[in-house]
Length: 104
Length: 170
Image (cartoon, rainbow over all chains, first blue to last red; front, side, top):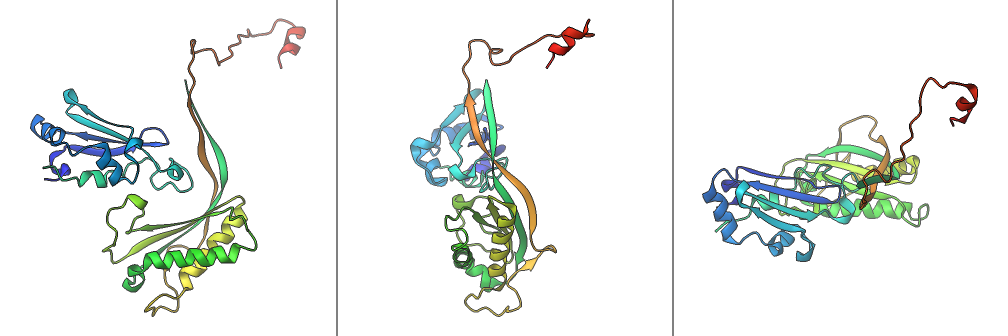
């Protein structure tokens, strides 16, 4: 099953001009726990999806009380919000590679 | 305290056009590389330091995600292309954009039939000035014991009672 089939909200946005953050929110514990315990969301996998080194991923946070997952990564150096090569001023459409993750 | 600031990096000129020919869409990466190469060759004698930036934004291919786009071959029947030039002066951005537009519009590519022009321009004139371009250059946290420390607060009372004190106000 793809992660977008399990999540209620899956979005990306700027966390300051140099970072993109992703929120994955679930409307039931079963779906949240399934994604959390599957172990697919690792810094190695996120780094591969977004073309960076695993140590560059700022963090992957699982917040049980909110049934939410937060992932924060750096933007490519030349693509800071508003920079000449910026492709997404508010970082609002960077979620697609994450959305397609297959959850066992 | 969070400090944010920007610096001006130049001026921007863009052109917006569409491509509706599968022959060109299927070789779009090669085509845009060639257009970039020709534009750079044209400007090498004039701008040897290549102090401008030429950006092709191909919507329908990887316009949003760039290098992170997992779909490597577009299945779209139509592409939107923004030819985007940023340079230290507006007239240089104009010139770089116009040259790139010329190559994109009239350059040859494999199996080309469209010798009138390769792209459909959305607007007349073809190029549009977007003016100054800024980028973040300050994004810091200032650790303070007292949050009011960097702010100078001065109290003045009005009306001022006599001429002497009025002259003291800068």
